[in-house]
Amino acid sequence: MPRCIYCGSNWHTEEDHVKAKIKGGQKTVEACRACNRSKGNKSLMDWLRWLKKNRKRRWRKVKEHNYRKKNPIAKRVHKVRYEK
Image 1 (tube, helix red, strand yellow):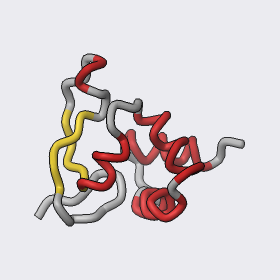
Image 2 (cartoon, one colour):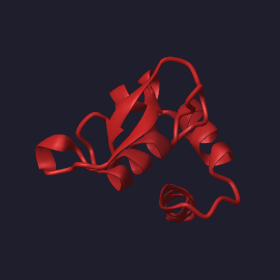
Image 3 (cartoon, helix red, strand yellow):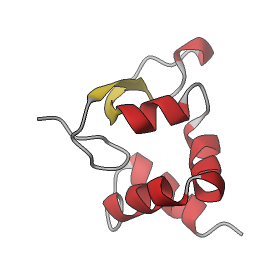
């Protein structure tokens, strides 16, 4: 069963455009419904910053799932994690 690229959940996964489709995004990844819906048409970095500020529980799941990974999304999570 596919897992969410952002938080690692395998509950109700669906396709998500990393870059919003209305902004020209074509690459899709598997994301759980909660991550996909909260991300909406935000950019990945904007969404991660929003999560960190507004959704502490989801941010913690995303942060823990991407800990010590080297993929492009994990690198962005790491960057937002250490922003002031």
